[in-house]
Length: 112
Length: 115
Image 1 (tube, rainbow over the protein chains, first blue to last red):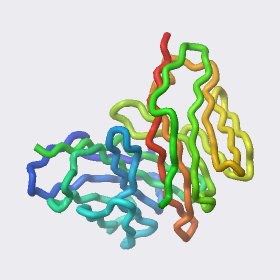
Image 2: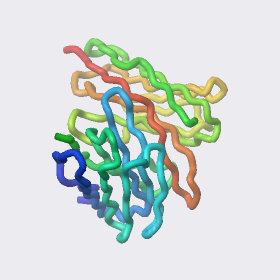
Image 3: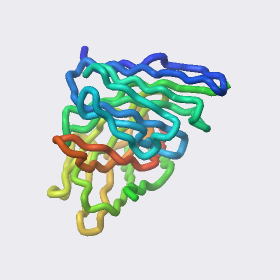
Image 4: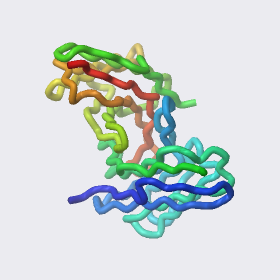
């Protein structure tokens, strides 16, 4: 079945460490996105990519980095510069405008 | 700043009743308005969507009403069921070039349908 796989489902990080969240899709979608979800805050855009080797900052990119070396993969690194990283992170992909997004099941990151 | 304002934050409806969630936007460049349903611990799933040249769209028990002049749109869930209990997000899309878009989301509405 086609879809988006995010891993791990739960991730714990010590303060000062970088962590990378995985996102893989087999939908053959060109566009991929990372959103952060906090209680009562909705979903906020971190980064997006329309094609391989190209990506753009979203509304809250500070403290995050991404890469897009393959069409299927769009990993997100949460760096130590992100001051409040505890959140639910959602990866999505899209075939184009007017088609909506397909979301993964998310990764819950907790800083301990 | 691109914003989508969603209300209410939470909603309790009796089984069989009508659930209504409202959203408003400012940016007239938004050109596609989807609604997403999210269950705890899961990613959001596309429920229904509308373009601004249409005033209403219905899919089963779910209806979007769209008022372009007021820059408002709403989701109506008819005959609400306990299985509809979830968080609902409205969103608005804006093109980013090359046929793609980004979505701006409302803050969500937690719906509880009581048996």
